[in-house]
Structure formats: C-alpha cells, structure tokens
Image 1: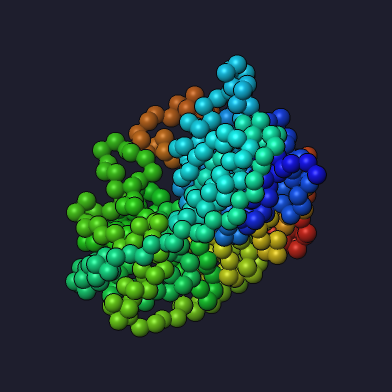
Image 2 (image 1 turned 90 degrees about the vertical axis):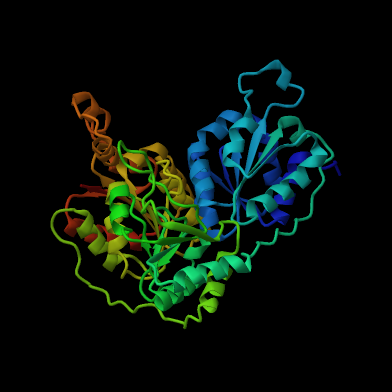
Length: 515
C-alpha cells in the first residue's frame, strides 16, 4: 500500500473535522486534491463556474448548516476572483475554509505566470492564513483551519497548498481540534446596561449576528417589554428567523437620513454583537453616524462573545418577565395590477412557502419587501453581508445545498445578478429547489439614488453608465441556456400565478419580473 500524500491527508482531516461539502473551481495546481476526493468518499463536491459563485455559495451553506464548507480555488488569481464574496462572508462572520492551490515550492522562484502574493490577498478577508510547506504539515494545518473558522463569531480560514506538498508522500491525518470556548460577557457589562435601561432615558438595543436567533430575540423582547427600550437589527444580517409566531425585529434603515429621523431623541445605544453603526457612505455636509451625535454608546457584548447568554442575563438582571411573540393574522389579499415594491411584498406575504429561505439581494425593492413580509409563513431571511453586490444567487446555491428540504426564494436585482449569473448553472446541475425572482428594472437604481445623494449632476454619460438596457437583458433565455426553467411576467396577477407554480416545481425556476 502506497504512502499517503498531502492531498489525501487533507481530505481525510477535513472529513474527520466535520467538513463534508466543498464548493470548487479547481485548476492544475489542485489536481491531487481532486484525485484524493475520488479515493475518499464522503465529501460532496459542487462545481461553480466562477470563483465568486464558489465563495458566495460557501457563505450561504454555512449560514444554514451551522458549520463551514470548504472552497477549492485555483491559485492567487482564483482567490482574487472570489474576493468580493469573501468580503461579504467576512462581514457576515461566516465560517469557511478556503483551500487555495499554489506553485510548487521549488517552482516559485521561476516566477511562472500564475505566481502571486496569495497570502497577501487572503489576509484581509481571513481570520487565519497559512501556507503549508511540507506534506506532513497539511493535516494539522487543515484541522487548525477548521478550528479557526468555527471560533466565535466565525470567520474565514485560508490554507494555501503548493502543488508539491499535495503530491509528496508523508501526509498525516490530524484529529479534529476541540472548538475554542466562546467567552461570556463580564458581569459589569450586564450591570451597566441594566443601569442605563432603568434610567428612564430613551434607549435602543442594536442587535446583530446570533443575537437575531429566536432565543436571543425572546430575551431582547423581554428586556424591551420591561424597560420600553427599542429594538433594531443592523442594516444587513446573515440570517433572521421571521414570520408568524416568531419574535420580530425591525432593521436599521439603509438611508442615513431616514435612520437619523428614526433614532431622533435616542439617549443611549446598547450594542449586542455589532460595532457602532456608520452610514454606508459619506455625503457632503452630513455626519457619518445614523444616530444622534450625543447618544451614549454601551457595549453589552462584542461579536465574539456569547450574545444569547448576555441578553438572557440582562433580562434576568432586570427581572423582566417572559413574553410571547405577538400573534399576527395574515392578510390573504394578493398584490394586483402594476408591479411595485408594496404589491410584491403583499403577494410574498401570502405566498411564501412554509419554512422557506429568502435570500435578499433586491436592493431598491428591499426595504418594502422585508417590512411587508412580517406576517408571512415562518421563514428565514438572508442578506448580503458586506455590500459587495453579486452574492444573491451564490448564497441561494449554498443555502439550497445545506437545506435540501426547504424551498429557497431569491429576490434578486437584475444588475447585481449578472455578476454571478453562472450560479444558475450549478443550481440546475445539482437539481436544487430554488425560485429566483429577477427584479428587472434594467438599471442600477441604487446608484442613481446615490448620484442624487452626493449632489452630482446626471447628464447623458452618467445616465448611460447607470443603465443596463440597450440591449435589454433577456433573463429567460439566460436561464434556459444554463438549464433552468424560466418565464417572464409584467403584472402582479401573472407573478402570483407563476410564483405559486414555481414553488411547486422541483428544481430551479426563474421568474423575470419586469418592473
């Protein structure tokens, strides 16, 4: 029996550490890893036709599975192609293990075309980065990468593997490393928050990450009911459980002006799992904070701390009685006539399937859709984590792999959808139950709003730069060309009928909603 090589020790260690799904776009440097996957069954491999699809899919997978997937990327340029969605995953604090191929150690001095500063590109999006230098070190490095990715609050671990450490003999399988214990907040942080909330001054609990799970929201609602503190989540959240019979939470508005109006008069902001918020962008003559400049800021719990425990201890410190979710009745009236954000929200509120997973990259439609589906059937809502567009379709791919018994509903703006349209092919190949709703306004509407916000003029050149018509994108033909059934609608009546049919259809289905 031949001695184990580095690539085989990698696969065996990942499987032993609980990583059994790999989103991949391999190249020559990764061929020994690909071969090792054949010899070691147990790893589900999903091919993506672009690395931004691969990294975004690993993000969506981990949010539902509660554990990391691996990615397989081809050298530094392959990692670079995936960086935008790695940025989103970093902001969402998603656990992920990147496996990146590299030049053989003895070949690197020759500066071959794909030679790059791969570590340098990986570090800004990674909580842990390492280049293995021998076959015998690969197994332990892989186990350490999984441990680092899973450490609270979650993050990206990037393991770079020169070709020769994969093909050389001497690989050693490493045992899984024990997870690092999540720290609990100090008692004085809880007591200080309780003093603030007892003061009678207007206060806000701003929640993020695992503070948006149902148990944590139950504790937050106890605190709110006992003290009249307001509850809001951050603008973009990795995963929120919503719908009937669940605790609800509003989002902080995206617009700085709207947020400042909403938070006018707030004296204290208590942060739970998030830094103090800033507006997405700077604007001439406006402050960077979406809350009163004189508001006091208190940190109850940092992102890496146990957020559920902190909220429950604060509720107990306040003697807050337990509360039940507000029982909401469903308005079964479907949206009719012209397609507007409000009409679409009305229909989604009625038609979302039970236990569906909504992936939201709806951009300008987004606020109305989120607010308008509060009474829908129980569902989870996923958002793009870091503002880099082009994550909606990959997130949907990964979520569908992680939760095959649940329907994925993707609310996707057309401009950002084109960044990673290749994800449709992977959905078809894997026969995943995804309903993609393309909001086809044929322009970068969010950028047109931003042009106005910064006070810039909008002449012919500017308008052409922000429109994606001429020619119009044909999403039905694009989807069909990648094996996805699709149809186009121009009215709410047509949407209501097609959306219901799509959710009953096995496999992916795309609806081009011309708005």
